[in-house]
Length: 265
Ligand code: UDP
Image (cartoon, rainbow, N blue to C red):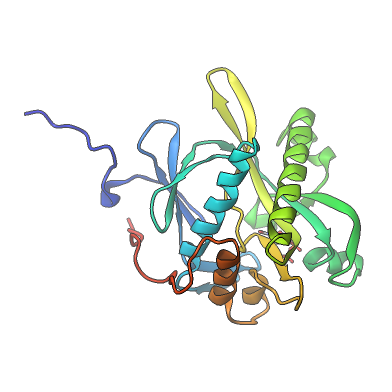
């Protein structure tokens, strides 16, 4: 008998590579690819606060797809290949660099707390910060000296990461400004993509209202995960508003429901 391997492994038999707080990675249909699945889980303060918010994963999948597809289109390399369904996207497998790269345009959050600068103060220029991705240590802030001394990234790679961060910030600032939203700050992750013997740094993970601070320009209303962190409520409504303004979700389209259900193994 001739057993043809299906192009897509059924959900139940898919190998789970990694499960994080808000996403799961499964093996992809081809070598060098993965499937990134967006869950509805919301966490903050290093997962000390946790809730399941129905519809969040669907919205982040769509918003992140929109951002990554446009980054690819303007020549900013990313891990994104294409969206597969309501909750999943096909991505290239990369070697994640263990740094959270934060770009800030306006003072907020930890910067305001640490340096005593009032939230909402425009910064004299965009500021890039690095945090070491390590939950046990609470993702501590690190300097370029730490990054190179401990071998997390080389000086050349740090230069490449900073150049990417600036391009992503410029793109996102313009994108959101065009729909009446101020990009206060955001976090991005990067990875090493190997193509034969060549390696380049690409933008990885997700860029969504979970990882950005987005304020309505007129009202200063928060349209991001601070609604959850600060118990403001209305998170799905806020993310839906971002999606609508970007033209991703039509009027009346609901983020809830459908899409594959996460299979627990
Ligand atoms: N951020 C993130 N994941 C983290 C920490 C921060 O996506 O683990 C994002 C956050 O949403 C904000 C930016 O990075 O857009 C800067 O966050 P900040 O350092 O102010 O930390 P926070 O106030 O969230 O603790």
